[in-house]
Image (cartoon, rainbow, N blue to C red; front, side):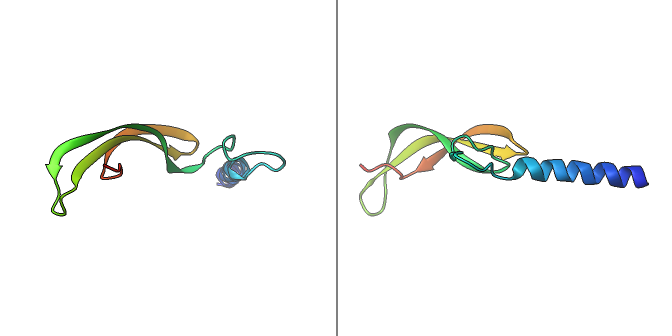
Length: 86
């Protein structure tokens, strides 16, 4: 039981040590993401052919979203509607 507690404490300390922001001249682009999501790519804007109630055309754009869990990034694309200006 004592060994498991020590191993768990070491694992938690190492995770927290890696999660801390590095000091110095580190920029946000070189920081390692621990948890969270961010938009990493944009596609082209397309008209769907649907006219909305206010008379403006509906647009759709594919965006690439990367979700980080323990520094491992999972990327997927999803549509975003009406983010383009007609």
